[in-house]
Length: 403
Image (tube, rainbow, N blue to C red):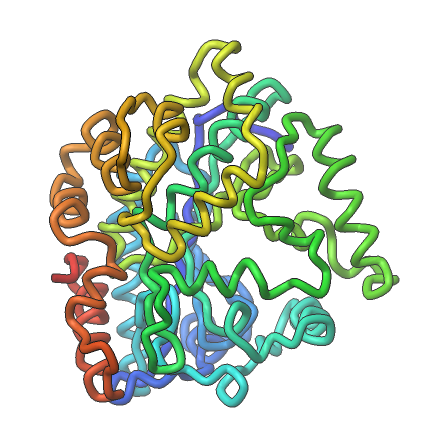
């Protein structure tokens, strides 16, 4: 049921790894965490405005708003307090939380433990189809942003705007430059794995950038019908539904009236996550609020043009060179510019003073991926990785930025 109009409500989901606080190795202990909190092996733990949920793998916990909120500022402290509450429960077992889009040395072929309680059948089916004991499934942590809409006309505007912003997101929020204890050469390795982890059934993720469809009927015909066709041989019992299967970088939830953006790497602290998500909302809002003739221009952008920008920001984050035609869509008429140049312009236009510290850190030092790379040698030893990621963990606990 669609309860809220365009931009009337927002949802946020934050994913963190559970690790040994001494070694920082992942630990599949989320089920025990939930048991310690409730006395049962549940899949959700409601704590007022924030709910803890399980994920595909047992070492990842998700914090999400229990009910959609009218602004993200109001939920920042509650999310942070829940981080501290979880940390307190885990600490008795020598465990804690770790932020970052990818664990830097996890070996998913050896360390993956799928969730084995409520809803486990879904995860087991995914594992049967795709083999989830690998990066892109077992080792990914993201931040999801949900934006409300009610009517088809509102969806048209929202989807048109979000499609344009998606390729720019890794340039702002990349936080995963290391995997398998090595520099990957990418600023957003999580998204590189994300875009290939379902190649066996390509209709599920498409090109990550959603197709240019702007009504529920068109979405059903172009996207959902293809997903249902490809999954059919593996889904005779209809265990997996189309909303769960759709893995594009933004997915339309017509059942609840929202579009969910999935391309944001988790940051070092709640403060940074909320700062960037609030900025993204304002940029999307500006695009979606334009006159219909300008909305038609947004709708005219094809998947491949946007996908090309997306590949550049996965590799280079803010250093990615942008086509001037893409930048003009956002109001910046300038030649020879980077994605970071465009974000600097958008921060000036739409940023919030309360998050000046986060935006200034980005403008001065780059993404979290850039800052991690600045702290690490080109071929880091595990102890060097561990020291840097211990610092990252402390940022989460104190809700401060990584320097």
